[in-house]
Image (tube, rainbow, N blue to C red):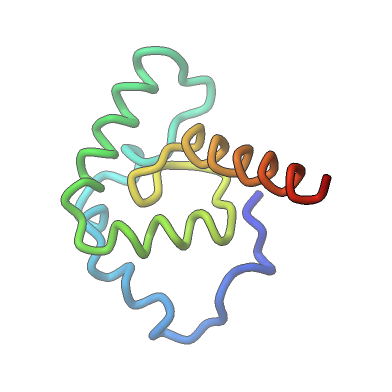
Length: 100
């Protein structure tokens, strides 16, 4: 589940970047996997979603949002769920080394 305490408030200016997303014209099922999707089907769907993200004018803002609130599902800012989890794992490893 997304960490909602990390979400910015309801101020429209904070969310306005979403209006410019390339994904607004795409089928949302491209960005969120159906239950039980695995293997080549999932990789192909993720790759198609990432292709939409690649030319998106707000990709960086989308990516920053997803990482900040730890979006648990879907492709955000060109990052899949697995990509984001790898980033979080790297952050955990770095913080453990610093704390040691």
